[in-house]
Length: 152
Image (cartoon, rainbow, N blue to C red; front, side, top):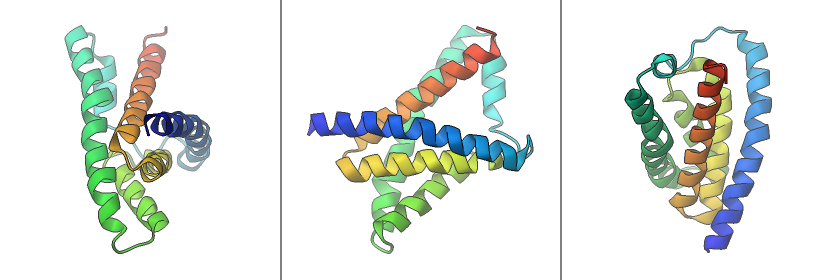
């Protein structure tokens, strides 16, 4: 079980990365800088207080993935499968996952990530797999944004 969970988690990350990049590139062409972004992100990344950055990183890379996976994959997705097919439930829960991130211009990439997270969960039936994938995704994204924002 742990081996399958790890295999699906790694496969999920390897699938998510190019999919989200491709969808993000298409998305940039659609929005062309319009549509806003998550209002919290620039504030956190521009801060120079190490403790604040650390708290933001822990929140985004650990607390948020746990909370979001319990809510979207642990509760919402199984609830929706009572009324819709698995793929319809995956699409709907992924759309809602994207919407709650408060960034209209990022709905398509976030929905793509949500689909991969939901697929990982449905394949493993283990929230830990999607939590770990989500955590690694958020941590990698934040580290990339922080390095780009600081010219590293």
